[in-house]
Length: 291
Length: 289
Image 1 (tube, rainbow over the protein chains, first blue to last red):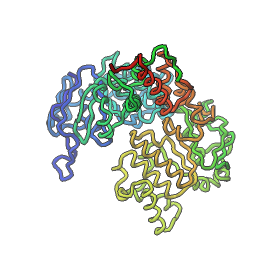
Image 2 (cartoon, chains in turn brown, blue):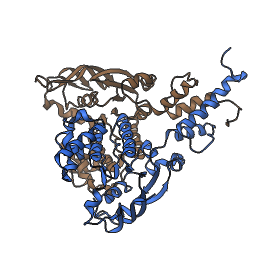
Image 3 (cartoon, helix red, strand yellow):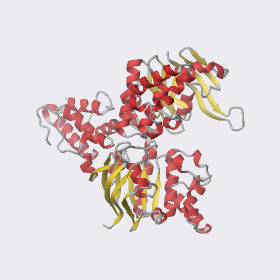
Image 4 (cartoon, chains in turn red, blue):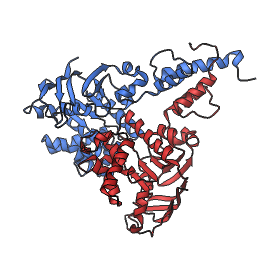
């Protein structure tokens, strides 16, 4: 098991008059090399939840097991350095964290802090640049002359340079153009499949959840209200809407057709591909495609 | 229709960018009252263009004329007085300690008397549905609420032109819908001309006309239907492919051809229902015993 939450509570400013409960009784597990998507309305606790994963916030009650690490309310910060190398966090708009004068130095900064020599760190920077799809000519340029999408790749390269086993992504494609979004999601998918990284993705893009996630967790009001595969979660559009969540575009379209009498025996199709498959199966044979 | 903005042969290079032009001889007009979308992939020059129109860019080649006034260091304030601009990241544009203070900022700069100011701030907040948040800290709002407050700031100064620079790209789907709905309504009630720089297909579909930028050049100008008919190649213009186009491509790969190049959601729905359901009522295909 890669990640296991056991009855985790988290309260902001606990023990003060301003105490605000943000997570209540969260229990969930992610298998080794899993891909979990966390969805939920703005303010539902998604970001608070993922900050527990590298103990930026520690639980006020309960316990979190992350591979060989255990985080409890008593865990001290000194014990956390190896955990933070193990769990790579890509925050929203990670490009705002770039600061070095060259791209190479920026990517090498993390490994240097974790004890790599200058040569090793620079070597790593070159490898990581390539991994995120930027060629070596970028190494000596300033990260601030890049476009938004490129800056984000550099920031992600900096996280990957620490060789994390778990990659936590908080809306990693927000603000990118559609092509950039596709490329970014394909990159994470490749890291997941080829290097076996466990991925935890917070997103509002339901199409991405359908296309990539193996497991979905739905948050509301600081509680985990549903878990399941994308197929299970998205079968009930009415439930999703009641929780202020979007329904994948294909499912919306399929539902409209269902209201007019079309049947989906295998369940609501969730992607354009699945929808086209179902339509093709029902298509009148030899009846011509005109109407 | 009269032109409210005229851009002629506008070129711009960022310092130290070699031969690369951020804008390369761009010329176009914006008609009064229209909604113009500007699309293009990241780095194509869209935001640079918006900043040039608002006098935020010291360009040396070409001209920009807004409401009959040619932009120059002397006229920049007269040009800006006609334009309200909303940026991508709502957190980068808040100055007030409360929502109401923030909306009042533009009016304070224009030295509007206090009594008038209070009325206009209240009216603007009411217009965007944020009255109950007037005394809240902007930081405590959601992204969609923040952009609505930014829109209230624009409503309060009643400009002729609203420029949205990827203003919905950081919002969740509900927030995005709400903001677009509001812009559509404001456009009607305030007689606004809207320029929206966007990657969002719904936002581009709201426009009367779309300009496509690529590497600083204006490469196309057309209606949304013409642009959307381009199919899966749309992604190269920095737009997402509309769902109906994706589905049509998947169906074509399975030997099912749509009757026309581009169908709206409703058209496609009608076509599929008719094709699928007609058959199920013919005697040979009847599902019931």
